[in-house]
Length: 290
Image (tube, rainbow, N blue to C red; front, side):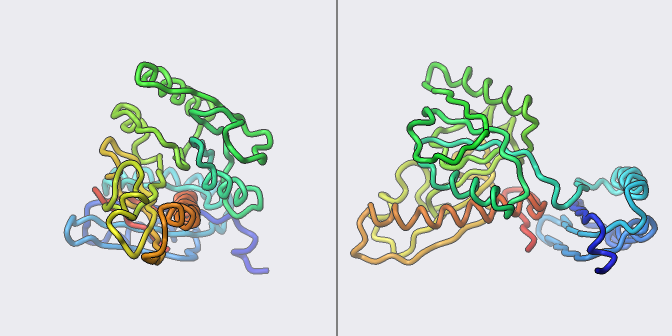
């Protein structure tokens, strides 16, 4: 067994205005603190003049040295004005799921968590429908919050969700086919930590019933899009997309059936990338490292 096999793997991600010597200063600090780099990816956006980097590493001198690294990197980030995250790679993040009646994405994510594929702990499931409206029977001991919503109660309902997020310590919120439009206030509250699956290949066919929109237009490809939630409906930075060929013989029901598989693939890929700190926001776009 190698040294790396016996060590906890950490990941550092950061973005900043591009500047000379940036990589050398960051990797030099890792070296000085006994870190052994396992992988490194970087991207320089010439248009925005921003630099993005993801580094995974093991710390050869144990936790005490890692604590020292965190302290020194915090100081370096202030000097270089870095927007950064530094954490254990496979730490199980706390995730809150939100769903309406379409539960196929939720079921797939829960399955992937339970077989150990996804390093996350689902701390709660929020729905505007009772549990009996879903087809799943695999909730286990995950708390289920039935929070009905109407135009008159929207503010109150979203405040209840905020309370759940605070009480559970949820770090990521996944809209797994939650068929409600979030208010501007709630979207702002969730900025950068809420991902939505939209059953269309954005920017086409935004809003409701996109498969029916696609059918009417006679498209030959349908898709799904995972994106960050913003106050602009279905306009958030895109994380991952996928498509599938369809034919003139496919009905709206066929599109919906085929679309379910695409949605599961897309949301699971996006959530996994977020759990492993592979996604960095770049204005209206994202940088997603492999």
